[in-house]
Length: 555
Image (cartoon, rainbow, N blue to C red; front, side):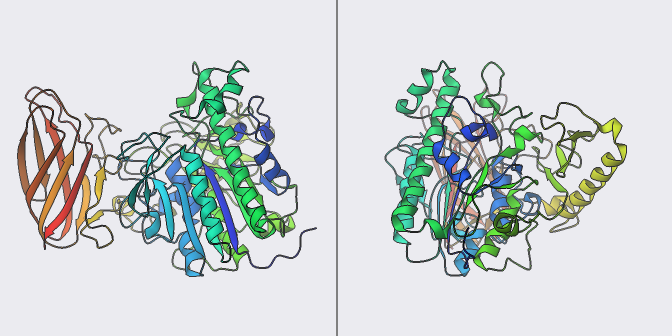
């Protein structure tokens, strides 16, 4: 039997990107073996209906703050909607304020610039990629999964090796250096998210099983994750810290259609849906917790859980008090984990969709242990599923249980009203994006990328060349500023059109030019919108640029 736990002093938290419920052998996957994850679950607890996401940033915002993503301004994955409100409490801040060392290794996806970088929000050490993943528009330098250019506390660094191995190496080094102090080690693998890049030694054994190449590569990435989790756990054993460390393993959402083969989703234990949907396949992910001193082996939690529960649970385990001004929405699962007490009854509401402003009844769900209410769009009828009898959500029983439909629909409406008025009564103000400061001493000249440009509310979604957006900035001090712009070269002459505040400029670009400079921007302090467009003589639509950097040169 576990001993009565003293206050927790160490947390190893591992989260993956796009790892589905069915991607571990414990959940019946017939293709890939995950012995380290299987053993982790067997020696600790499993949350068998852990509903995350259904996308990367919302899951991480919920995890870090304990609050519904719609309260945090980090409501989507790109276009300026993935920047966490810097006034939000975070797990790292909670632990750091209590004297813990905090390290992040991997994917952040809650802001690439001041004031929302990981080391602005509580982490003492952060080795991470920008944006939502490697091979994405936010990455400057080498964005391959091998030898990637990463950020170390905001400074670009060149790395050697496969990204997941690099993050694991850095996490192990952090745990060794901090062994004598309380620490929070957050390892956020950007795998098995596409593109599917992995060494052939991981893929070859799966090819022999006759799998489609796409799935062989994806499961090779899963096998690599399992291996690296084993390395992390072995380090705890070597340091003599295993019994006193709470280890959590989970994922951010279900399988992404980008890894489908001929329209088919990979094995997912019969669950319906995929990443981005509110069906179980899009939401339910593995969630294992091990703390040998406190959690009995084989503990199972079948009630719905969510990333908002991590902060209150870890705070309780460590004897810490969460923020009073911005309290967590989640519940403390520690009694359920350590004493097998019931999870407090609740209706769990989740929502996500593209667009600058959340819309009532669009891709929204309300969940209890028995029921799921789901509405895909405001003009479609609500669906209802009896999850105890129909875990695959094959039969909509809304017509048989109208009272349940009304009850859960009312619960969702109350939730939507509450989270939509967290900061202001006006939705536009409540969900207003975080402006990027220029001239902040911590990062005077931020690099601006397509990750954070903003498009009009009624504009089509996207960040392609022909879908340019504007950057919403906050000029910290009035004065002269320099603009550097980077873009893909072209064979013909082009014009660079720049608008910033009241200033307008047009620069002529010779063929093959890929960089331009402007030193004539005199800007007042305060909010400012920067628009940069490429235009040829014949182009019907102005084009966006790759990167821009605005820096104060005379204040």
